[in-house]
Amino acid sequence: MFTLFGSLATVAAAVLLTPGGVFWFAAGLVSALALGPGIPTGTLYLLPYSLETATKSTSLCQTLLHTLPAALCWGLGTSVGEIPPFFMGRTKPVGADKVASLIQTKGRGFIFLMACYPNVLFDYVGLACGSLKVPFLFFFVPTLLGKTFVKAPLQNLLYCSVGFYGRDVVAKHVPEWLLRNTSNTTMSTTMNAVCVVVTVCSCCMYLRLIYHKKDHSNCDHHPTLPVVPSLVLHAP
Image (cartoon, rainbow, N blue to C red; front, side, top):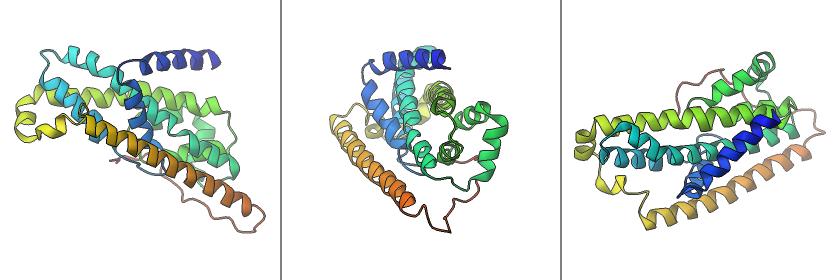
């Protein structure tokens, strides 16, 4: 497990050094660094970027290779954004019993499967793993594999395919300013500001929830989270 994690960390570090890697990592982090859907930066930034690149390219393969580093950095950011719920779950067990039982029976495979598609309630997986006191890498490696190396590339493949094969439709119906939002200096500056605000607010929220749970650790009644279905088929 440590060898696999070291290899993944090396690949992730190399990807982050690509042009714009930090921007895309921050965009992915913002999309996941909150309980719930977060900010849909995949739709706001990765989708327009892939569409713009695909409409100007002569080959789908060339488009995929050009946009893959951005997609991997974005996926890496979404993976890191799932870490806080894991440590929140360690402070106090939660009531996501169905998810916890599936993690106990299916193990890493279940975590990996839940991370392989846009799952707005993946936070419950992190909370359940934290409640079960599983090792951090038991949770994070399948999450990293699913979100960075499966979900993000597949989303990028979908976006690039739409842009490449439907370039006439995209050129006719998608505003030009939307396609250029990732290369616009104002938009990039706005994104950085949003990253800072959301990160600070999310950290404050997590800390407040953690200390709130600690303050009520001696109470007879503990509020629990609702049971979550094993699969969520809709996400923004």
